[in-house]
Image (cartoon, rainbow, N blue to C red; front, side, top):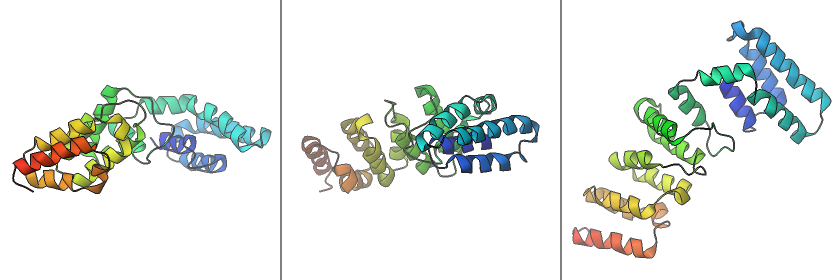
Amino acid sequence: MKLCKIIYKYINEFIDEEKLIEELVSLKEDLREYTEELDELISKIREILNNHSGKMMRYQYTYNLVINNELYLKLANDMTNYELMDMITSYMMVHNVPSIDQELFDELVLEAINNGKSPKEECWRLATNYSRYNFNFQKIIDYFIEIRDVYYLGELISAASEALDIKSIMHQVIETKDYKFIKAVRDNFVINSYIEKEELDIFIEELRNANIE
């Protein structure tokens, strides 16, 4: 998994080629059985640096090299759902995320909820990283509503508003019949900024009917 995390950092430009080499060298102690493969990869990266001076050219050649590296592909394929979730949520709103489908995304959400170090944060980061991929975030919405977390519900709406049905979320909040929670959602500035006036009027009317106003 360490190799996958290092390459993930590189392809998302958190480290440059020199730092990539440094981290790969330090990894040899942990992956002694793959010393030959790591040496070969390091050698090829150094060759790219020697042959190309432009930053973008170095990145493009190194990017293609590392994501097609056999050792990387093998270890990436062996990652558990927890390891994959942990790697993805180490950063947010990156431009190169693992290619996954809706089914695996939902499994990663459940992994975060059930086994994550910080479940709410990890669920939110999964959403921010895949907000451009037309995924359904219903499991995350259900989780935030179930635990009555207004802050993270608002952050989710803020980060992935174009992928969400805000009106449906508001109705789901109302259906909890937890009016303390409903009022907290109604009063949340971030959430209110994404609610259409017509929808907000309906929301407030529900509160009036419940004698909360």
